[in-house]
Amino acid sequence: MRINQFINNNLTKIKMKEITKKLLLALMTFVFAFTFSACGGDDDDEPAAKDYASKISGVYTGQLSSGGHVIEDVYVVNIYRISNGAVTVNADFFGSSTNFNVTYSNGIYTLSSANYDNITIYVQNKTLTITFLNAYGTMTTFSGVRD
Image (cartoon, rainbow, N blue to C red):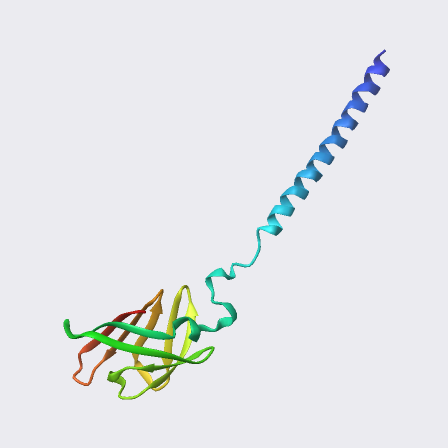
């Protein structure tokens, strides 16, 4: 009788180990399937094909101010696409159209040029902000929204 109990107990333990292994394997398969399917790209935040210029091209209308005073209540700046990563900015304070490179990071498009190192230009959502030191040594800012 003791031998039968010993055999039955061992058979039960072996069956339980097999069932546990199968359940563990099924659980691991389930976890891995969801883990790998959840690791898709997060490209929705970055513009398609890195055509940053198309995303910011347009007419921006806003205010031009300097030293805390509004210089022009209705001021217009135009941005025209040259290529995927380059634009022309047309604003009277430049004197003529000026070309800038466009980069994108964390929802902000930044315009830069080796010719203009004392100017900051960025677009976030549909708002263009340009900040520069004018000829009189005063900070001048344009802030406008794209139509």
